[in-house]
Amino acid sequence: MAEILKTEAAMERAVALLEAGEVVAIPTETVYGLAGDATNGEAVARIFEAKGRPRLNPLIAHVSGMVMASGIARLDPLSEKLAQAFWPGPLTLVLPLRQDASIHPLVTAGLDTVAVRMPQGFGSALIARLGRPLAAPSANSSGRITATTAEAVEADLGSRIPLIVDGGPTTVGLESTIVKVEDGKVRLLRPGGVAAEVIEAAAGQTVVRGAGGGERVEAPGMLASHYAPKASVRVGAASVLPGEALLAFGQVRAENADRAVAMLNLSPSGNLREAAANLFSHMQALDRSGAPTIAVESIPATGLGEAINDRLRRAAAPRDQ
Ligand code: TXA
Ligand code: MG
Image (cartoon, rainbow, N blue to C red; front, side):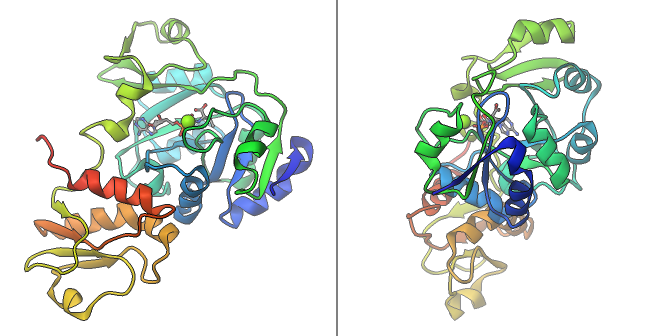
């Protein structure tokens, strides 16, 4: 069972757990978040594991201020203006990821953009103390309702996480609004805690609503532009064909290792958490090898394997160019 501590008493324990790569449920002004060190791939994998998320969708990187935000992303003048107007607060900005950012690729699902927000209150104080950004989706298991109280988090995730920080009911009660500045225009990717009209007033321009205006349409996991390697991907490969690169899992057969033009192992010991943490960086590295096809060994469909397999299937699906 999770330990529950009030914000006043929770700081040291939360920092220690996060430094150890654990996940902690924390209050923000919008909803409770399930936080992990955004620079630590296994910590981020633990977030997906605890949520039972069937998909490795990109997560929001929470920062404690503009300096930390600028360290991970490039802010154009309009995004900077919005950050100044709404941070700390319920606005998330999708921004170009800096090449040298220490954000783990599992946070961005291999994308070259990163969603960034500065939460109010305990969250920001915690991030400042830790000195690193926190990846945090809403603290509910997949398919369950978003939690706005510590009790709701406890009822849903209490048996799977070590600590819930209780900051009382959240004030906004709705997830953050997500926008992205493109060609000097503000696009709404997800409606949320800040009304579009309020953003329009601050930006001095109309906000472009997406086709359906909601998360369903805009969630990048659904989009063709979502990270897909240039190489074609062959899943469930038992043996490597000539010219193929190999994305291995567990112990590798000698003949496969011999035949592969390049090889990386998601987890030599067959650990799914390690495999999730390595998935995007290994796919990117094998793609850079220039092999026309990446053969991927079978990954068990249990636990995090479900989300890993979902990601691999979509990388293997035929795509539009
Ligand atoms: O209020 C909130 O935003 C809460 C609290 C905990 O901060 N967090 C939250 O996270 O709602 P989550 O993971 O449930 O939703 C994040 C959304 C997803 O819809 C995801 O697709 C989108 O952000 N997202 C993340 N990175 C993105 C990117 N690079 N481009 C476009 N959308 C992105
Ligand atoms: Mg959510």
